[in-house]
Amino acid sequence: MYLEHFALKELPFRLSPDPAFLYLSQIHSRAKAYMESTIWFTDGFVVITGEIGSGKTTLIETFLKEIEQDVVVAQINQTQVSPIEFLQTVLAQFGYSPFRMRKAELLATLNNFLIEQYSNGRKVLLIVDEAQNLSNKVLEEVRLLSGVETTKEKVLRIILAGQPELNDKLDSAELVQLKQRVRLRFHLTPLSEADMGHYVRHRLDVAGAQGREIFEPETYPELFRYTGGTPRLVNTLCDTALLAAFAQDRTTVSLADLRAAIAELQWVEFAARTHTHLRPDIDDTAPHAQVPVGRLVLSLRGTHISETFLTPGRVVVGRTSDNELQIDSKFVSRHHAQVVTTVDGSVVEDLNSTNGVSLNGKRVRRHKLSDGDVLKFGTHEVTYFKTDPAALEEERATRTMVLDEADTEDAEGETEEERET
Image (cartoon, rainbow, N blue to C red; front, side, top):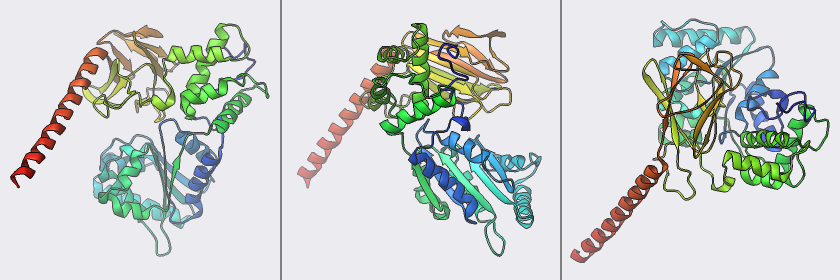
């Protein structure tokens, strides 16, 4: 790698949520203070939202690292669960083996645990990351848990962190009671251009740059133009740019190196980008939307779990919620592998994982994917399917035409009805 070339001690732009690299912009400092308020107040219930890659998970990890010893924590990252599975997961975090308990027993055990911890002078905190995936029924269980109290005060503090869709759920009529329980809500916005520059320099200094300007000044406006100040995108582009400069035997990253990295990633400017792993039938008529050229289907023992659509760029596969494709399994590393996609296809690369990536029973380090390839990540399977962009464009155009015709028919119908009236 490029560490020795740039005289760095560790990789400065890893995607893992390492608290040592946290840059506390004003907006991130406020979010962290809101998290800390859950400990100060007996009715602490905080909601933190932000776009993908905005730094929510890193904030949580930093907050947990600094938390006092008298706080008992349950941290939930897998959120596509039923109400019973959610309660079981919470109790498992507190050291119980609850997987044969019925719901009444789960609730009684959890209530008794909370009261016992309160009696012993301990505070109990529940943190749920990726909370936008919780169903309304599970969120109702969260509301009920937030109401557990002694004669003096509530005994469970709660932090819900998630993508902006979580706000939409909380604002729905079905969850008005839960919304009333929330003490503070805060949305993490991307970094400003100035903060983004400080963020890049901070991570380089933590990695050993010691104040050296590794990125040349003229690179920063371009870096902001293509990342919008989103930390994860900044990390991805900076890491690729360092590799481009290393390949040219340069000790600083020039504008040419940055543009070479942008070309390699096949990124468009941030303002024109859409989420790279949305289904193509969601808002796919929006201008500038990128057409998927492939998809990954995640399954476990033949049961379909999820699909991730691929456009030019990088999708990281791993155990934690900060990955584009999360596989919640003890056999999967935090950041296990990446799938790099261009218009010509996709390549899977192992990211020095513990258990590796297998294809047809053989471990692979790097492999260009063919349609129908089945990759093994522990006990899970990921099947790759190549998508025909031309066919999707034709489908999109047809759907747009049908919608336009329907609108025209409705307008004509209303005109005829007015005439009859």
